Image (cartoon, rainbow over the protein chains, first blue to last red):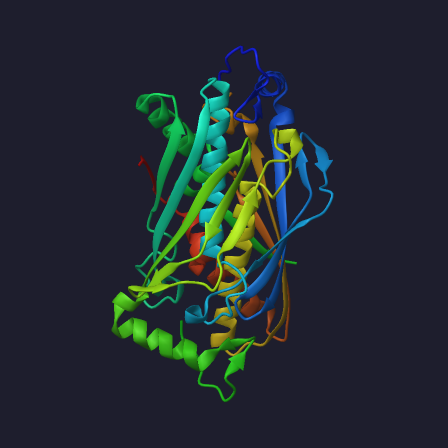
Length: 188
Length: 188
């Protein structure tokens, strides 16, 4: 990411001089770029479970929030739950939506491109026969995910297309999904 | 998924006769297995944005919740945000945690395996140099994700290991992550 030297500190709410400083620091000391995230989950009943997110490590330093973020997941009744929360595949779209948006806005800020509004709609199809192993040849997850952006900005359509492609490529969640990311399971 | 014929309806809070019926219906009519999920996102400022999850389609029928689920994402201050919510890569762990847990519990219920407790910890490393494009060769997303389960059940360790592997393979979110899932971006 190249940042423009700019007068004002905040572009789209992003502190660009601080961003420039972070990029310089991580370039010089890659250890500071190593982040470790975690989540703890407890099953409640049936399709309901609860995840707590709080601490993470950045550059070997432990960061703890003032209070944890807690998320309830459940299935709708048609999927045998009680609809106490969005379901996990909807949380996955939520994660992806946030990540591409933040990546797009941070890069725009670094380029000194003023953004007024970013809306997006994310959609994906799932064939339940994969989850239920009715047919072994059917993918259990999303076949693909479509993201439609609506961006209000003075930037040219070319710049907006470039920002979207950067967001898709450099967003950590998008990158996790579009590349085959290994998951290791173990029993304590 | 094969379900055991059982006396009681609820196993681990899952209605197994209903699950058996769903599997039969989807086997006979694959159209009913087609689900379409969506999320709408609005950027707020800087690293903060908000996602709304409400309707979805299952078997061509639109399902609408009594009220939408709304999620705030933000970055911690060390990543130039104001910590108004968990960040997107933490939401991704949240989604994955919920999905593998629900898949594990539904399969256990189908096998008539009584589960008393399922706890899990999910962890993953991200090298920020990928997000910031400091080095093109560095993956922007999670290198891998580790899930450690702690399961209280009368089932044998072999059965629990089998359930964990099923959860990893058939959970829609795990499957989306472990297989390269295409993301299509476009501008409205």
